[in-house]
Image 1 (spheres, rainbow, N blue to C red):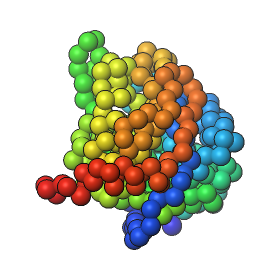
Image 2 (cartoon, rainbow, N blue to C red):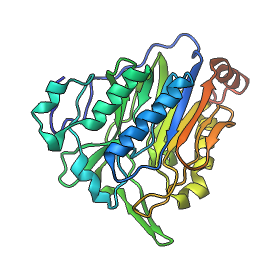
Image 3 (cartoon, rainbow, N blue to C red):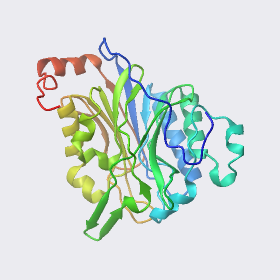
Image 4 (cartoon, rainbow, N blue to C red):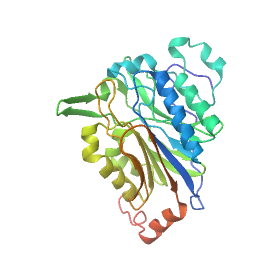
Length: 305
């Protein structure tokens, strides 16, 4: 696929016709404290994905903003990349010059292939058709490094109070498409950070077995609502939830909440990391999923669809 400066779509994404239960998947979520140095963040990302692969992870999810947590929200504009489909090919990028070099996509593609995992790439800044803004985008890579899906974050965070102010709409263009993702024959839901607060967004992605959520929740909002919202999404959708977060003090002075976690369809937390760099890992058990849905068939009892 030829890259275009403002390309914002990938090839049509289709889900499998599910006739069998989900097989067991070992999933990992990476937690980072991303810095203002993209090269250092790439090195950290690769190290933690390798760590997950060494623990036999099949899927690895990265956090939101893993390549860069700038001192200012506008810092990411200088690092926005053109979207390139498929695996990495050096000649595809040469025409864009250094300012458009797709190093984040390159590192994701290469890391997925090197570690033999399906890599859900947190979010990276992609070029937007709106001046002065980026798309905040999750890219998905298969085990051979091929890009197999994407999602542009739709709901943009805004918060003012307690000495903090955040306005993602100032520097990010909202995506317009609800994701329809799948990996290893498993239908997936995806969201990014603030999307978590909108249950109808995930209902629109039904049916799915696993919900993937990269995030960079602030400490203030995370302490109040992060676990509550994640467990609610797991219970109401009777699905596994894999959530990867930023977790610590950043150079900008911003503090993120961390608590990356994996939750089962009954709302039980299988693994969690409070703060600092590291991974959480757990087996997503297809039999457990079917047991919950059979004993309490709430999804079948829905009246409003």
